Length: 491
Image (cartoon, rainbow, N blue to C red):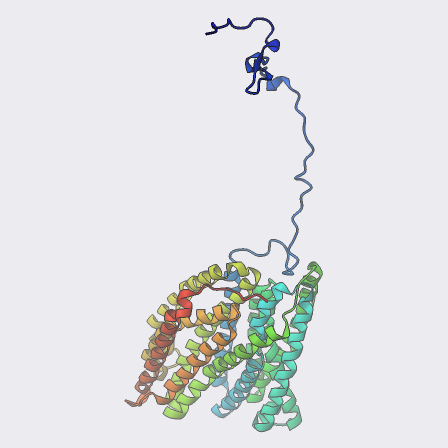
């Protein structure tokens, strides 16, 4: 046995140890001691900054300025569209109240015939392009102007053509529009202009929202309402033109507002197109797939708001029909405001499709928070509100409360309609809109007459509540809704 060797002596660098392969390797113990450096003694070397040269590249696909999108954009857009709808509805309601006080019933009836006709024609001939533009403008980029003007140049001539055919089948529309001394051709021209103008008037609101100017739509509608009410008081009352004055108070501002609004939109679309460096227009199959069914659904909604009070008037007589008309107008104002609020979901989903489910849930929460208290307040104040119109109208307080209850359930339907539009589920949107509208019309037709007077309207109101409960339950319990996530189909 080899005795242990003493530790080696001499310089540490010379110390070697045999490795496992027999070759000598330096001994780690022979390494020089670690030298600790003093940071304070070392000079500081400042490297050139590279962060300062970093720039934020704006989005080029959406055609909007960087930083314009924010989490609350959907709320702002929805409130703006809702307020625009409310302003228009309230102005119309006030105008009819003023007209009823300054002119005979016959003149009032003639005016309502013309105005209702061109609003129906213009609304139906829009083909739901307003909502479609909110879905397509954010991704149009440099083609924004082309998309907008192609849509307007389709809507306006189509509305005018439908209005022309409508007036030729109902020549009284042109006769009333011409006034007592005007020719039939002049009256026909005024009616066609009103139809074409109204077809583009509402679409302008949607375009402004999609171009990040939602509150411009509110101001536009507010000023339009004030001008129209002033012209009504002047032409219908002071000048004494009667129904012809009412027609002019509508047609004149519509034509002027379309001209001014088109100039504003021309400037905005040029700016949006100039900022963008890309973008794409929807293909023809996508356009047809979305517009065809949703346009049918929109027509169903337009008929719903106008046809139900007509049916009630025919079934129960003009006096009871008048009470129902006032209550139904209150429902229509709130219902339309809710629909307009949900329409804004289309543009927010188009901007951020990856957040579609989150945005849909946020829209539902905001819709209920805003509108449920409004419905509760209306139910609590139903009697005093109707009393403003007279004792006969106040008798319909119970009817109004029931209608407001049904409208609370309809909010669920309104949310689902907005989601289906925003996600491109056009056929599903059309089915829900048409079925809910047709069921209300059927309820108005088959509701039994169990009593006399205004109380006879109670079964009609109960039928409306029942329809909304059934539709809301169908939406909430549908298998597709329970298992599916909200998705936006790729273009």
